[in-house]
Image (cartoon, rainbow, N blue to C red; front, side, top):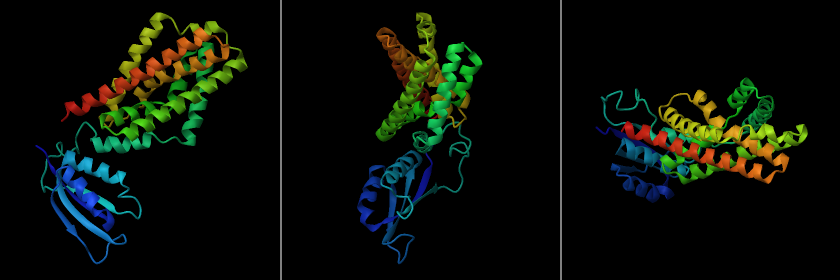
Amino acid sequence: MSYIKYIKIIVPKKLLNEVEDILKEHNAYSISIIEPLKTSIKDGVIITCNAKTNDAEKIVIKLRKMGIGEKGYGSINIMPANITFSCRDEGLASSKLSPLELYYKATSMVKLSKDVIIKIVLASVMGVIGLIEHNIPTLIGAMIIAPLVDTVMASAIGNVIREKKLVYKGMKKEIICTLIVIACAFLLGILFDIPKPIITTYLHENTLLLSAIIAIIAGVSGGMSIASGKDYEIIGVTIDVSILIPALLVGLALSTQDIALIYTTFVFLIINIILLDIGGYVGLKYKLWNHR
């Protein structure tokens, strides 16, 4: 059963036609337009309508893209149109986030703050030390610190809900964060004069294959956890394994100036990132499809 949402929108009068087109495009009905004497914004009109839950979410996303709901630029209110409803069907006891909730979650994931950059630098330093010393607890600590899980999951969410801007922003953050890790590892590699055997230890055929399997599993698990609305920090450690260590190895390989080693580590990193993105997409898609 599809439950109905009641939507109330206050917008500047100049945007009325554009908003009305969006409502009709997404199957809204019982559309009413009121031009009150006074609203919370200058020259504002009130639009009310009903729409199915899925359509209502798409409408809100489109309106937010126009800037509606921002300070001084109108407002959007959405609520159940029916008086009685099933708690589970309305999502209050649901085991998944709606596409709209995923959208807002992803918009916070793609933000690159100073704190994120500092954590990445600290994780990179700790990770290099862990690789040099073959110290597993230190490597795990680096992965816990590194906030890299959001970079993968944001673009995966963008792909699932078909929001190209989210995909691009997620990929942009992913590239920036990866480059920061590589740069830190490169500088530390030069500083400590890292010998090649330390790097090649992590590049055996079995190690590369197992790493690829871990990347897929981590991506799928991360996608399912996020779509379920659950905390994914533990899964995030596994995701960080598939980005942090390969990126560190690229930086260390660059410090050796060994072309073959640089090529191998770079391919290793790219494959892991692609597999993580694919895994995240599959996990999100499965969870959303399985709970329709």
